[in-house]
Each structure stands twice: as structure tokens, then as C-alpha cells.
Length: 125
Image (tube, rainbow, N blue to C red; front, top):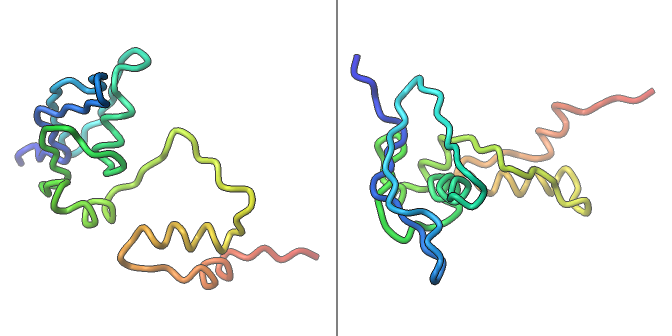
């Protein structure tokens, strides 16, 4: 079995005006691999991951996830990946219904927040 590339990054760069945050990096992550990015603060690790996740746009370079180009297949890719953000605080003024509605809006296949809440309800005596 060929070691299939799940993430392929080629010549990725990200520039913010005069600051080069990511400088022409390339790497592949293969099926079954555990992969990490190591570097000093400000090295571009978070920026690189946010570009792969579709949260930021690259200045140049190519990215494929599951063989699909991120520029043309981002909705498909977002449906297939799971992301744990560095900070996962929810807005204190949103109800659980509103939070579930928000997350459901990220996907083409929608979930019914009322049904989800009903399925995990806690009964207090």
C-alpha cells in the first residue's frame, strides 16, 4: 500500500504587508502519521495551520487536503476535518441552542439544535 498524502503543502507563503509570517514551506502528512510543527513564537506555525484549515488565505503556494485543492474544495474539506482551536471559549451571552446553531451553520448537512439538546438533556430532581 502506498503511503497516501493526506495533507500536501507546497511552497506556502503568507505575507502581512512587510512581515513574512510563513516563508515558502513545503511538507506532506501521510495517512497514519502523527505530525507536529515546532518552532519559536512567531515562526508561523499557527498561521500555517489556519491556512490549511481555511481560516486564512495564503499569499502563495498550494495546499491539498485529501487530494483536494483548498482553493476550490474548501467546503468539502471543512466537512471532513476536525479542528481544535488554541482558545475554545464560547461567548457567555449565547445559549447552547445558539452555539449549536452557529456550529451547524459551518456545514452543508445541518443539525437540528433542539433535537441535539433533547438527546443530551439532563434531568434534575
